[in-house]
Length: 179
Image (tube, rainbow, N blue to C red; front, side):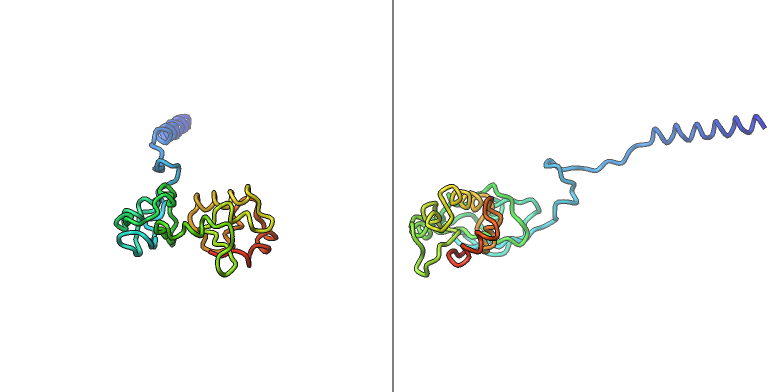
């Protein structure tokens, strides 16, 4: 009986030692802290405006604006390159519109509304946005900072993402602005 117990103890001991020395599975993580599964295989981006070949492009997940511009053949000679944040990451289904130099300059520097009485959120400068009720120079700058960091406004509701703009302020601005 003692021999059986000793043999059983030795067998269990060997099993424990083998289990402790087996390799541990690891997950590969890319350079920005996400697993490979978190990065989509491909994203679709529509590039329009002042690029050589406007159109729909399929890019690798994690691509940036510079990649979309390169896929579209680069800027045309009349592109307003300084208004494009080339380092911004792209989202699937995004439209990237590159302005023509001078096309948005008149409305971007005008202090008042356009012909229909509304201010375009994608071209207005601080002075134009400051004419809106309850929007001072600081809030106007936040709107422009959001636009530069995130790209063009796709709807007036995007204003909710700007720090300091809530539902009540958005409703007061809804009929005074456009995209």
